[in-house]
Image 1: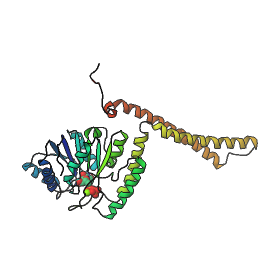
Image 2: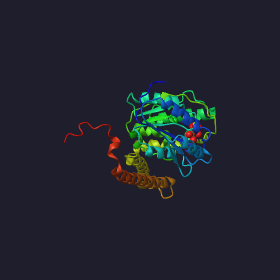
Image 3: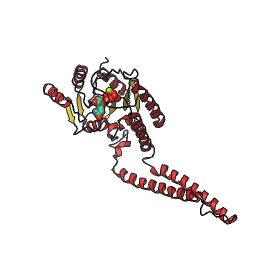
Image 4: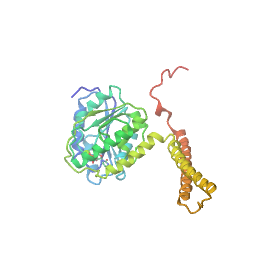
Length: 320
Ligand code: UDP
Ligand code: MG
């Protein structure tokens, strides 16, 4: 293992029904970090476990009080669990890892070494994945689609093992299942991102919490992310474009029908094409109004935006 001069580091672990895995994992992490310099805080989020996870954590904490447990009222999902911990974390560097012993704590120093090269986010890549094919195949497809649509070149977006500068997390609000898209959202905010290969171990206890329907949900979330990253600051660009296309098509069809009526004296009143023209014109106007409404919402939202979100450094801050 590489020697490690730990900066102030927070390690965040979301757990949902991981009663067999979590205590051995805490042992492993504490072993890896005990002979390193620097300080760290360990934050475990119990995402509404219904097994003995919380009880085990409390018992273990009475002997080793150097970690924090955040207990959520019910199972809100991995994104919400991570979000709760991100709001709590006080260090400049945050590592997230799964609580099922699949992520190897010996990789922690490697993440930090990579971060020291100047990255804002280092994502894990489970290049030899120890999961059944029913998971790995959809995952390959998901990663391929995400790479194409977001333009972010990572092999393994969904890897729970990642290291971030805290400032990256301050610019992102996680909800639903958006944790898979943190790299895409971070890239959109202009942060520097890379990946390292990580050792991935088979799940020994309990079962995976994500079924095969995650591909379907993932694709829907992907559309949201694409929209949020490309158009959320200018909604009229997409809705206005759709509106203009629809309106113009309807308008041209209308002109065509009008010319038939005046030049050929044709009866256009009962033509389905007339209905289509009216429909397209109305849909076009609707799209346009939605875009304008979106612009108004964006403007209001921007009044609250922390200006720092866009600032990397300020040179000469003290010069008046
Ligand atoms: N997890 C969570 N809340 C949930 C589902 C999962 O906190 O609603 C945690 C889970 O306990 C584990 C991590 O998220 O620590 C990754 O879950 P899992 O191992 O089931 O995902 P997989 O490895 O199958 O992708
Ligand atoms: Mg797992």
